[in-house]
Structure formats: C-alpha cells, structure tokens
Image (cartoon, rainbow, N blue to C red):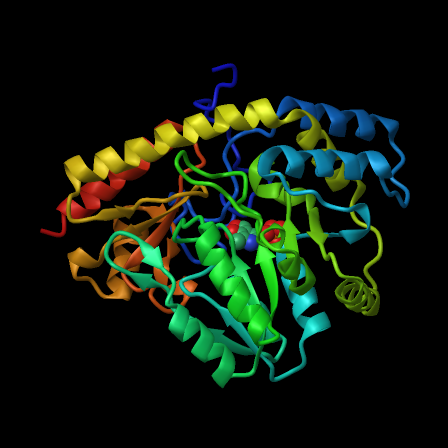
Length: 392
Ligand SMILES: Cc1ncc(COP(=O)(O)O)c(C=O)c1O
C-alpha cells in the first residue's frame, strides 16, 4: 500500500459536520462520529495539488471548465462502468440532494406520487415532502440476511398512486445492495409500462465489493435512456462533499430542458470552480488511490464482520455488496428505538444514523460509516461491546 489510510487526521476545528457539531445537536461532546457519509481520509494528492495550483492564481471570478472537464468524466464512466455519456446530456449541479429536489420540481407537479424503496437515504423523503409531493413507499423485503424487491408491490404502488417519478438508489444506501441487471431491468420495464420517469442516484457506483457489478440504469436499454436522469458525483468516491459538485445526465432533450428551466427559475447558473477542478483532477488521476482505498475498506469490513461474530453474536451485519456504509441489525437485543439510541449515544458514545431515519423497515437497525482508519473502528467496536455487555 502506498497510501497510509491508517493515519489519524484531526478533523475537529475544520468546520466538519461530522466532528464539530455534536454539542450543538444536543449530543455529548465525546461521541465518536460514524454517521454522515464522508471519509476520514485525505483526498488523493492529485486533487489537492490541482486545488492549490488554482488557489495560487488568486482570482476566482465567474468560471466554467471546458471540454477537458467533460473528457475526464467521460473517460471515468467509460473505464469504470462502460457507460458512454454525451456532452450535451450533462448538467452540473452543486450536489445530488440539490439535483433530486430540482428534478422533483422540474418533472412532477404538487400532489404527484413519487416512489422510493425504504429503508433508503432519508433526504429523498424530505425532498419529496418539502416540495408538496406524495411519498409512496415500496418497502424492501428482508429475509434476515439480504434485501430484495417486492415487484408486485412496486407495480401496484405505481398504479394505485399515479406515480410520476421513481427515485432509484443504485447502489442502495443504507442496505448496501448493488442491484443486479435483472432487478434493474424488471423495475425499468414496469416504469416504462406505466409512464414513470426514473431518477437513478448512482453516487455510490465506485464502491462495489468483489463478486458484484454496478449497472448504470440508463445504459441497460435504449428505452431506459429515454425515461431516466442519472445523478453522479465524485464526492463520495474522492471525499469532496464540501466542494459541492455533481454531474447529472439527462439524455433526452425534453427532460433536460425542463430541468434547466427549473434551475433558471431558482437562479442557479454556474457551478463552483473549485468543485469542478477537484472533479476533473480526481477523475483523471485518482484511479490508483481509489483502488487502494477499496482494499482498505474491505479490511475494515472484515474487521467489523469478525468482531461482531466473535464478541457480539446477537448483533448482525447485513453483508454489503457496495458502499462504505454498513447496516447493522440490533433487533435481537429487544430494545425500543429510543433505548437503542440511548445505548448508542449515551452508553457506547457512538454517533450513528439510527435506522428509523431511513423510513419503513429501519426500526432496530443502525448505519455505520466504515470509511475511517482501522483504529477508529476498533475504538467504536470496543465501546459498543462494553455498552452491550453492560446491558446484561
Ligand atoms: C444515495 C445518496 N445520494 C446523495 C447523497 C448526497 O449527495 P450530495 O452531497 O451530492 O448532495 C448521499 C450521501 O450520503 C447518498 O448516500
């Protein structure tokens, strides 16, 4: 390994949402944060160097990168997933949550049904509801080990609620599924049959564990290109969330125009130059760093898996197929959701995302972010073990 992912980097005092706001959010000062999905690792050197170079210039007027920005993105998707994107499909936005809200406003009307698959990344529900649309839930099925899709319910929910848009989380946060080609085609064909547009959030596409493969929804069938918008970003992959850059692809002219018109209504035009510089540098030079990072994350995953088996067999890891977020099942402890939260925060001193935040099916679960040095995970697991043993 060339990169030392074991290095403990102090993030307190940097304005980090993960580290600097516990007390403000009513939590004890010493909670160990493993919640929000950013990483405790430095971005690749090629990214910092590009940012420093640009910062040295010292002028930050209205800026826009040209064809070289698109080329870097185009090559990244070609090399990672085989997807061929076109330059005129691209709409840059400050982030994917921003994109989700914008697309909802651009492509649906107040009162329309929007389908999501809970438990799922909670800002989807927030964007739907704060924009006055109806949240329609196709709850994922869980057999105690793996999540699958209830396709019958998926189609019924679409028919019975006049659903206009489906927000697909591909790969799926927090349950870690990397949807298969068959599953995606089945969902896509149902959407196509009932005139439902698909927003495919593929922000986690670069974190796929061995034995699984990411399929870009839009690339599966030419018909899916016609009904979908794909939301991508280098922010999870290269730890750039604070730079606010995402790349949204809308292959059809009509959808693209409606989305651009909505952006214009909101007064959004250019995107942050530093975000664009970081994105281009990461996609050009970050592949090797990412490969090392993925090896390190596999080690973290193995550590958690083994620790739970050996020390806390009543707690089980839902084996992730992708993402650096792991979904842990605490239901055998028999605690209410309030007591589980109390256990995590006040006894184990861990700041996690409670399963209930992710909607239906989240009760009794917690989401852990494993993108941190091994020593942080060891500390977290040891605090968790002491807190659970003290319950008995
Ligand atoms: C599925 C998913 N979409 C979007 C985001 C956030 O994207 P952004 O920071 O670009 O708004 C996250 C972050 O955790 C996520 O997990």
